[in-house]
Figure 1 (tube, rainbow, N blue to C red):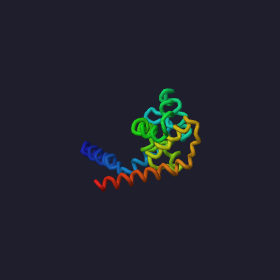
Figure 2 (figure 1 turned 120 degrees about the horizontal axis):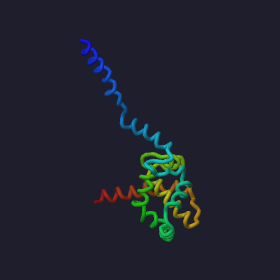
Figure 3 (figure 1 turned 30 degrees about the vertical axis):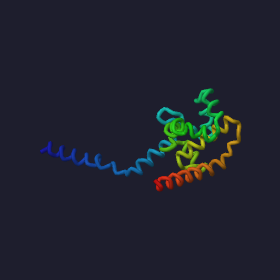
Figure 4 (figure 1 turned 45 degrees about the vertical axis):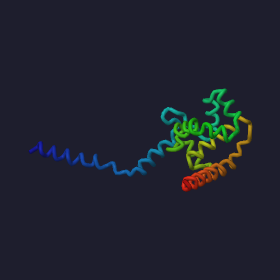
Length: 161
């Protein structure tokens, strides 16, 4: 009889353990996001504090021949040429798509779309290498507009096929 009591007690006490995971996907994502945006490192990578810190880090990690090659190309060509390689590296390793302190800083500037953040950082870096004014406010306005225009054009082209 005593054993039945302990078995029944163990079953009753174990039920809450299985029913505690009642968070939705969105709630879990938000909890993880709130942790990530406070971290200085994610998956072993330093996360810049803001766009100026990101430009400093790019200066540190890009070798001189790569800087020279990037700077020697036109801004549009240079950015588009490495957007799906080095741009993706920034997006993934700096947490621009899943949240990081850098993504929050860029959100606060008015950039909310991860690809816009990457493009902003790459254009800003190209201008820095060429000693040009970054025109940060203009970039923040023009990059999302250009993306929307590209998406609209691609949508029309897709409909016409």
